Image (cartoon, rainbow, N blue to C red; front, side, top):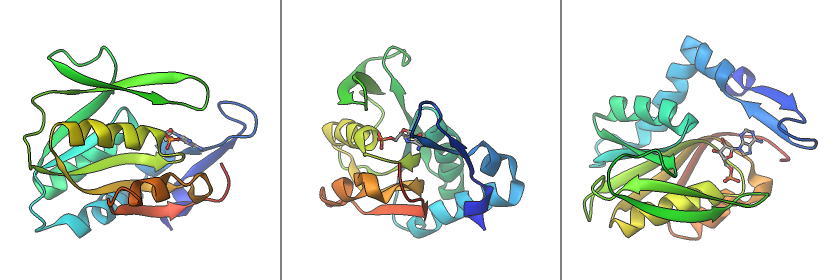
Length: 174
Ligand code: AMP
């Protein structure tokens, strides 16, 4: 089972957090292929033009999904990493704030895009990425994750914006 290939590290990076480590999934050829195929399958023949991935684990999965769907890939990165003109958004982390960016010319108005990351918790990062994509006029077809932590309600927050959420597995707790 896909879920069994995800390793849990208790109290990382701080006490009380159960870190869901996907490096073990990525290292398993069958699990990696299954995950990418399951994330891609619903969007075949849906006129998706790009996959946007959130740095850094969203790059690994999103790049593979883009390849499967035959689309381009759009990186959404921590501030200061993208070389051309960017759009920037500030978002809230558990402690403090951070900023993420997208290239202003990465998506054309009306383009159909899916968003990919490894895990959705509170939804802070995904909602920031969605706001960047929407500012560029993207039509967000879905937000896709390997892992959902439903107790943190991030997926609910995205669905409340009329964006379908796909997650392959769910874990209880934080
Ligand atoms: P959030 O913005 O709260 O939805 O958090 C999602 C981001 O933080 C994703 O990019 C995850 O990689 C990372 N993250 C949050 N919680 C965990 C966790 N328990 N295990 C692994 N990664 C996590």
